[in-house]
Image 1 (tube, helix red, strand yellow):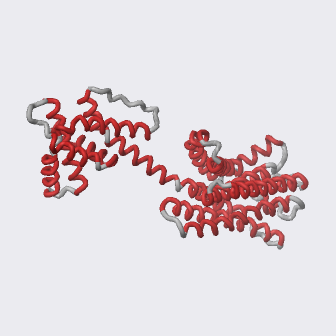
Image 2: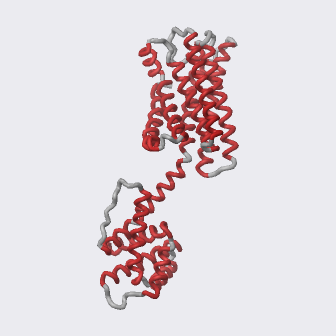
Image 3: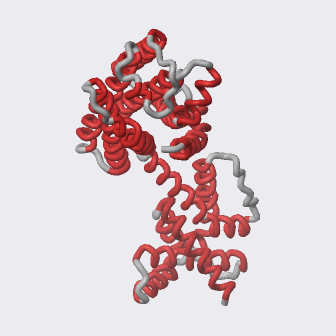
Length: 382
């Protein structure tokens, strides 16, 4: 693998981190949010600092050959720990028992990092190795221990987590199940990376040469594992994204009717764009409700019923037929109110018609508004 094979996924993960950074800052006191931020950041840093060009630069800046090795091992150890911690938070919440276990995991990770750094400091690795340090120094005192400690931690995490993901995925569904199955695949690649590295090191101990497992097979496995693992933790956010998209779609669909009703009442139709979408959506729905109340005396449920039947007879789906019929009735009521012709009020049926419209809920109002916009467009085109 060359530098771009490391830097491209690092850039993708970096963009994901920056995209979620505002949310991380707003909710930085939430341990789960900190774990997600740490996981994405460590995954990106792992790719950056494991790239051969970066290894060379770091070694040269520090002035110590192969100093990048303990640095990369430490970053990847933290990444693995963030995976464990985030999965624990996902499954069991933020209770005191989980917090105690999390502290123990991080304490174990810190111990692993201290042992890695201590072993490197005690050993001797004078010749810089950009791609094959694991096998080249497999029989060197203390450097050998450093490699074994890192691989042992990596493999333990890579074996435990897929089991947890698989058991949990059997009792959930939707986005969470998709995320867990993606995580399982990612951890499988990560475990395969550790086993390939371990096999190459073990072969050196036995006097054989399986270095290709470490230099050619393991790096792509690590890259795929890190990307899939990060994606697995982000996938359950799809449910939140889906909810946000539905809210935005509802807000946008409400616009035609909202603007027309605002114009009818003479009230401003300005929008404060920097307010949260949920607040804007609630305000728009409330405005439509209030303005429709003023139209209630002009509603004629007979008009809506007749239009609904015509739409059904022409093959329109029931939901769309109802929305179209309500939009036609509202358009007729607006015209009647603005012309203020005598005899246009229908107080007997107006309340029933208003209840029928408002009873469709927020999403129903949005569909009615969308059909109303289509009616106005057709009238303008005609």
